[in-house]
Image (cartoon, rainbow, N blue to C red; front, top):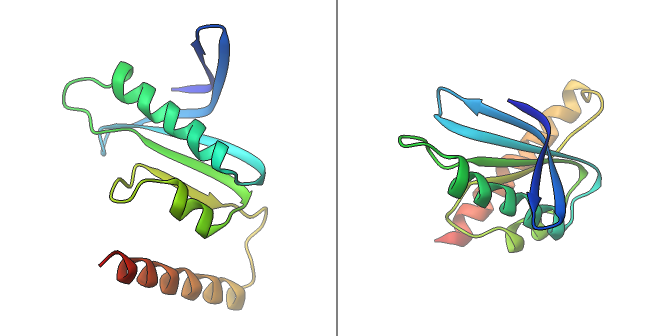
Length: 124
């Protein structure tokens, strides 16, 4: 739907890198690209974008928007304590410039599965 979508609040301009509408999920998907390490400010900014789309852009029958922050590096702890529990509306993911070798990819996937299991166990 948009690239570098400008939102203006009072005299401040903000830009969402990419805005999509997913017709299967019936929701807006907002993507912000970060070239450095993820910060809590990045997540807060995405929360602002999601809140705006929830309050101003959703139509009847739409599901809540999804926000995705793609970054060069991230801390799982920072993400866990910055984002609210039980509302999986915002996601942070580390991107890679090229795919790793098969062995490394298998290792990364196993680590990710273990972290997810630990987080589910902690929530109980």
